[in-house]
Length: 244
Image (tube, rainbow, N blue to C red; front, side):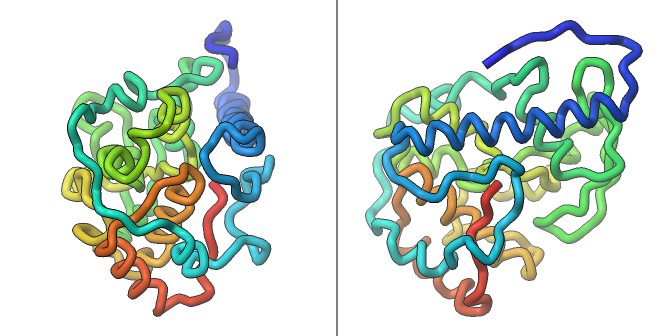
């Protein structure tokens, strides 16, 4: 995976945005190739190269939930963020945070270093509109959430994955959402049994994404997680798994 390129200071912002969009497709394709190669512990339909959202061809979230093993949490001993890599991965100079910001925000502006400098987020967790501006006092207004908190992932099977696969998990677009910073802090390392988005209409999509991540990486759910997810999906039986 290339890690650097020469930046053009005069590169038009529309070209830079297009370049990041291409990086998203490449990132999804790389992870999808690893999925289909059998490097991950379970199989699922490969993520489409165009990065499309869930379609009528994707399985129902409630059906996949019933295939996930139900176990207790493993020990948190030895867990650290470094178990999933020392930070965001980079793809041709664009790190994962900025790739996800570009995917999830609208009216995006990008600088010559591939940083999203501004944009508008329709926050899925709160339902409010956030005008994002990059800066020392404002960047935290929008954070990138690991939908399955990494400590939860660790305690539900990721400790058994190779370090390379854990890095992929932590940088997988399927696992990531740009969200309201304070809500992300409030969630912390909570699972579905201890925290749900206050924006109730989004909860079906939220637990479906958690189920998709857990299926993809061979993780399990606790009984409490399963029960909350099942109760939520009862209200939206046609909810399908997301693909990115």
